[in-house]
Length: 69
Image (cartoon, rainbow, N blue to C red; front, side, top):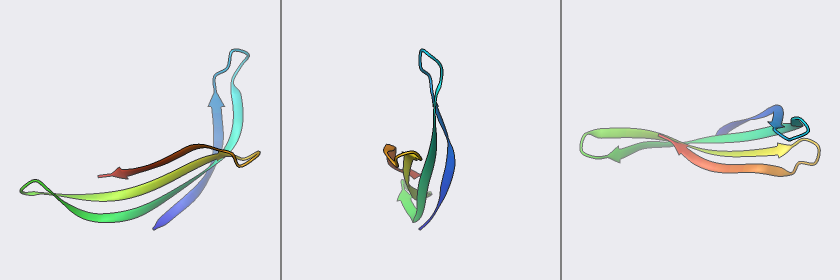
């Protein structure tokens, strides 16, 4: 498994103007490997786990697990 931490800015639209919140994102990747799919088709997959938090209080506002194939 390998991963990285990224810092950025969450900009959300609000009636009185954009709400800007510094964030940090952690995303980890793990190679799943070759997957048999149908007769003559091989696929490869990577699993990822992503967490995005506000820098001010470390509150998580996005948590996602998925696969890239």
